[in-house]
Image (tube, rainbow over all chains, first blue to last red; front, side, top):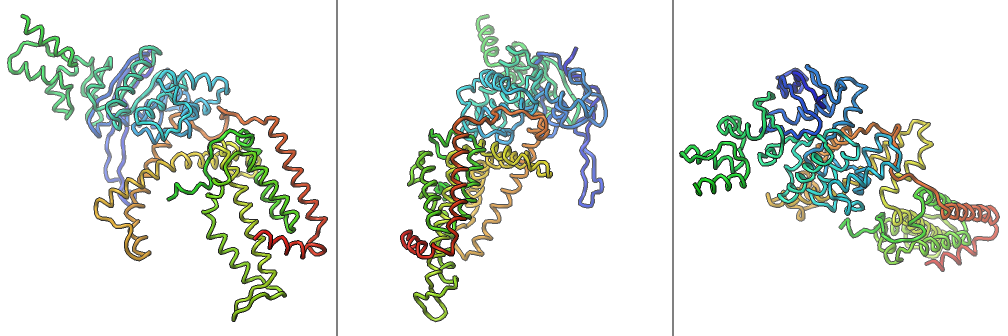
Length: 285
Length: 285
């Protein structure tokens, strides 16, 4: 059974002028259907304003679709009574690390979710400790969040979600405000949770190198899903991606340009290592 | 500048008072404030002063550090003393120049008010020196809990306080950033009349407010996505617990209050105190 099952979701933003008259309607999410199975790592790609963040907020019942159905772990996300169950099984990490940490000490922030769920305090501590260990932040449990780097704060946020024992974590551009080291730490933490704890990941991003980590990619444009498939299937269509104003991983671009010049290397190269391998093979021949 | 003021900040140390339950300290502070307002007599003042010294000794915060905090109230102190000195009507005139009159009663009043103010501020700051902010908000929530029955939103007030405390350093940093950005654009915060200088701060305040609202909005989403639904059915990660030392503190505290009330009634101000109070007020100066 799929963990998230979305069918024909539609969500509209209504713009109003100062008197409250409708000026225009923007369809942020337009007829989107997708499935996420347990343990799957999904990336949703799209440039700014493609509706990917709006779509992400649906999975957490922060907003409700105007049309279509959305089942999260078998529960209808539109039902008022299911909201907190949905939010518990699908956690959400946002872009700005400063604006999602509530506690004044790291461990208190991680405990915030379980406190809201009404869990006994011995178990809260168990969960806080195991979640902090899972993202390698246990040594910082007594720190003030203000003393941490961006990447560390983001890992604390992930631990805060983990402590609620979710089945799926949605991350809305979690690395956009981080330096390369912080970015790597956060991505490592995400991959590890995905592999070790079998938690589904939905990574919203416009960074292609991050999307490569996923099992399956959805590319969004103007609220619609334009392309879907494995990273190799997606990134082999360089021209189409460029038309959607999206970048392609550098290694893929080089391979693509070499092919255009008549060099015989495979189309589905994603990483630098694969490119090097393909080129050495070519050289040895 | 704001960072120099030690008043109201937490002082890291390991003392009996530091380890006490925040509720004990909050109630203790209230009892102490009440006792200061009962005081009308030099002997009672001496007891209040001794009690304060005992607390300072127990909390292991250096006296120097506490005195530095007093800098913040110097002006209030001076103004209070001047007003009391010149505006108290009395019979024994010591000094007269045109409309200005200093009487013996005035000097006595000024000394009483000043020492009361100092003891009041020191008493309150012992609470903040020895209690972590997060602990303090927990304690306040618990102490104010009975007010819930008269529809005071106790949990919300405590949550607001703790979020405010979390965001103060972030907003200070942001102010600094905006000021530098405006300086780079030629803003001038140092020259001109007071009115002009205040006006020059508008380009700092407007972006700061806009940014705070944006932060607030994002924080709400983050809290909601972590199943926050107010204080109902919420458990505590660090439940407050009374220990033996708290019981001892309560006994001391109420014994102290009892003695003060007894003395205040027994030594009613008319009979015996005028001469003593005069002697005391001169000594205090």
